[in-house]
Length: 556
Image (cartoon, rainbow, N blue to C red; front, top):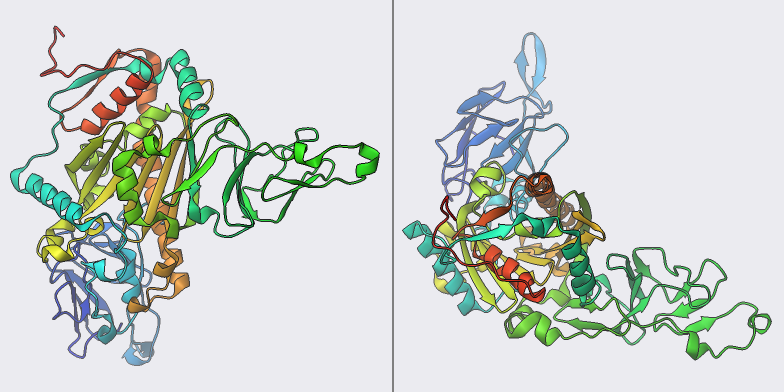
């Protein structure tokens, strides 16, 4: 984008700017770019969220090639190559141009290793900004992307209720209220006896969410899993059905499939080359006559209980286990989940974090936003109102909706255009260890997996799914490759926030718990999800529930 003929280029959300960035984090008139014939001067126009150069907030500064420009949370890179024209110092200098070539990051640290975090929705406008000023003015208001990418959400009347509740909290300086406080014994994070019970009863003895339907997109698709004590091979059979088996050859018990996922019509044991089809049937035995007579139907793979519902893949790790999704998902989630159309999603990124903390501490970090303004002051708090959320529970399930700063723009729209994924971030908790977070362009799936026999150790899996049709986004003129690269960066950056900020605190909590210095911690009135979560699993274990306290005093 070159400077306007006047030498001044205005940047902001309002339509009268030369470069329009219709994103709620951008001020109406955010910044100005001045060209004096030789160089560019960037000047902030007292914007709400600031203008940054290479991590430093500025009021005005001259640009150099390669400078990283942040308009609030949105990154632009100033590429100032040589171009013809202006004589300088007896030589011909090229007229510089600024290419607003963006990445979807929020990295005001200027870390040369690259972006360390991001947030949903930032990067699509930066891709639009590669176009000319006349092209940049969008035909679709990016502050309200309902019209093209957020149509797969909860019922609209529920969206309106949730958004109104968040607005009421903002206007009244309130938050959700658990009705009191609770003290939680720190032994719950350290006790090996309890950890063994949790492993046996909840992870070995209950159905587990392996992933979403898009992980098995076609006949012959498979995935493997070793998280729950039983090696699992899940397949999409020739009829399109979802099946799961013990991933062990029936000859000598060798692990049959070692790849994490893929597409195959046959699974062949590396030991003696016995082979099985996607329905688990033994279809190949080299030198069968030499081996001896066996009835092949007796030596098919051991099948595990498996069920697919609402785009979710559940498997029980025990062959004699039962799956009751009516109970597991409850009436509420069974009613609400179909509106999200999880079955249309496909996996884009997958990361694993090995963390030295109890798996429940990892889950705790998703139970409140009270910590946002302190822990995430330079990351999530730039796009979320800390200590503002909604909370609803149904038996052993609960849902929070975190309040985005974009709600200030959403509430100006007619109610029929309100979109909860623009105004907030829904967070669904499935007992015991699953977090689902849908937002504008996809869904995060987070699972905290205990390390058997190690109460202070777990692995978190953070997967991100998108809708294939969203990758096209022709209305924005974004190439599929650009979209997927951008979405990948957003997802991994968000995962890094969880790892480097949230889980760092969880590991710190674990060290305190292991030291035995504290006999309990406290859950506040504004942390009802933590009250519910801990009393839910205590009830499942037959433990005494944490009592509700009016106050915490020195004498107990």
